[in-house]
Length: 89
Image (tube, rainbow, N blue to C red; front, side, top):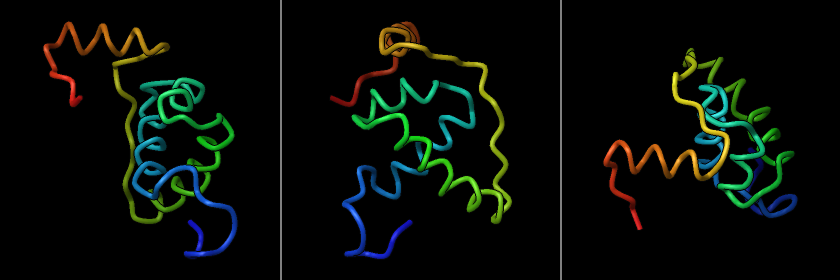
């Protein structure tokens, strides 16, 4: 994470960086799908993981793999439709 006002404008908020890292570590979606969903590039997702992973490890927050796997936005939509989870928007 960078000090406020320094460097290039962050493409992901700190909360989004934590979220994409946890989603990737849980193996829910590959980096390219996460990048597509968050409107950034795959290297941005990778950098977020490089920043956040050590923090999770330092604070003893192990992340276990999920049984759910998504490869396309359609996979996510089908899962949400099947599980009757209501969309936020």
